[in-house]
Length: 239
Ligand code: SF4
Image (cartoon, rainbow, N blue to C red; front, side, top):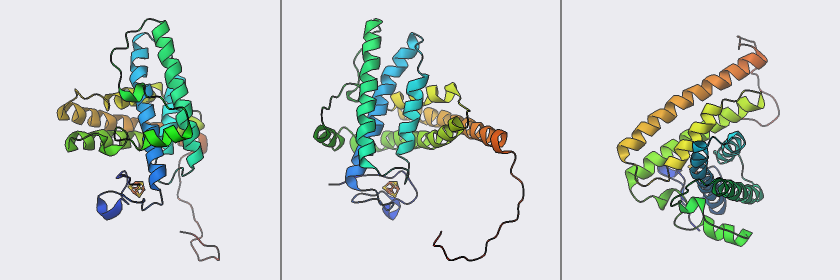
């Protein structure tokens, strides 16, 4: 089984991990992480339509943030957790779709990410390794790179936003932007210029997210101050 991941600076030969991650991520786990992101994009596509009728999306936005955070380098290598999370994502996605249909929202032609069905672990594994899922699913290299750049921006933002949320600081504007822009990575009508603009906007929200975490940290723990620490050698192994 092959994989393709180039989301961090440890990528093999500075290009991408293709057999196994330099971080230890295996190809089957990489496929599950890709399907996780793909499922979140499907929720996001529907979530943008939910905004049109003013539905409260905060719970789903938090779910998306948690899912993104799970796929950061070395954060979670537990395959069972990904199986569970993907199943949960599809349940939430389909519930949202049913709510939108009930409220007569025009869904139009939805992407595969918002419609695919899997009924068992085997089907999840099969879908996760399909050509439609994962980084290389986008053929045009410029579009692919920009989509991934935006997605990796969200992964970092998700880590900060989740930490801030755990300290009681949450900004709904950040979750809403992530959802809107994740949905945009499914949109084949967007040009390189459109995606460059979205990348810059992602950067702006990234700064906002760092400011939110800074506020959460300093409000909770106080401002950092110069402190004496022991940097001597000890017996325990450590980095
Ligand atoms: S996250 Fe792991 S698999 Fe992906 S590029 Fe980094 S080292 Fe390679």
